[in-house]
Image (cartoon, rainbow, N blue to C red; front, side, top):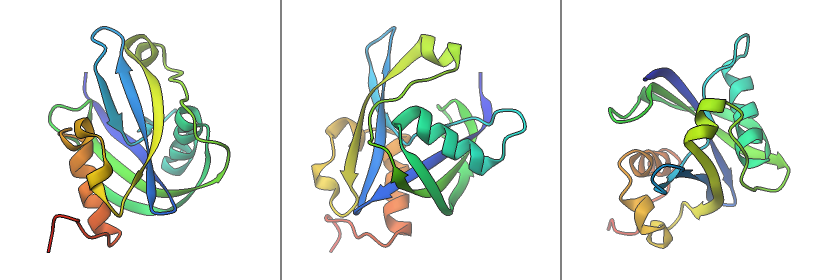
Length: 152
């Protein structure tokens, strides 16, 4: 089932972005993702992002700005995606949980990790081959003024 909009937070600290790793219960497949999810009733987009960051990473964040508004990946669960640039204000990053029963039945958050935006050569190979998250990170790096190590 495709949902309409995913509201996600690019949490940046010291030139690093925090990603969460989902582990599918049925297959054991793991993927890195920018944390986020869908709106609850009577919730603003910004309230959704702050809530999702707390649920999935245990971090309290402040939103700096909306950095991307774009169509979702054709193979993804959302038709549209909005990415907000955030910074942590309190808490310690650790794997959170999915409070929605259908999501919790399908996967769990197995890990959180900071990835250096200045140098993608240190990123996991599976992240660099991901057809959804990797292109988002490349666009994010470019929007924030980071240069590719492979570019001259």
